[in-house]
Length: 161
View 1 (cartoon, one colour):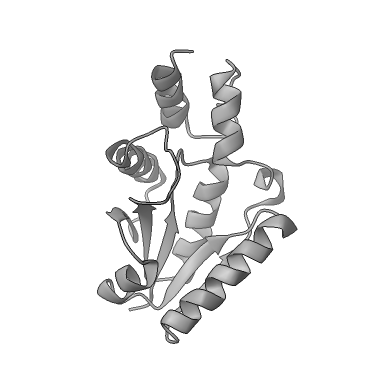
View 2: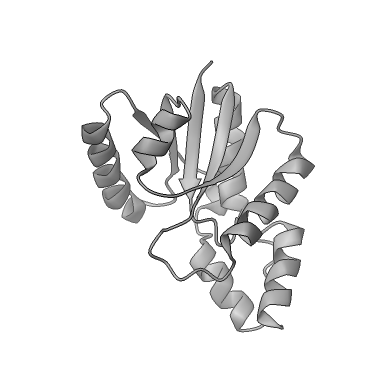
């Protein structure tokens, strides 16, 4: 069984993330969307909220080979624990590449048997980021075109907008 992990903070999940998950689901027998517990970012949503939002969203897509978990510690350790063959990382723009390339090389050094696969979302989703979505929501803007409906509702509830 070919298993991949798509890690991230997913604070919150965007339509770009969903596109990458759907692409990965066609390439692997199982995709684990792994929410990072200790990502050195100050998250708007708690780990439990992020996992719940992801599960709700992915349930509506009917992807039977995708599951959501939370993890902490080194990603390569979690990948070994799950017997994953690959890590999936999304690339939106050239600016993402340098950081992602460094991470892929470091992960390869830590576990030479673990591959990293870069997937790009559809062109019309490449400009979407969780950070920008949160900023638009904080300022009272409509984010429903960038995130799933349940996430837009959760953002409104969290920010009181």
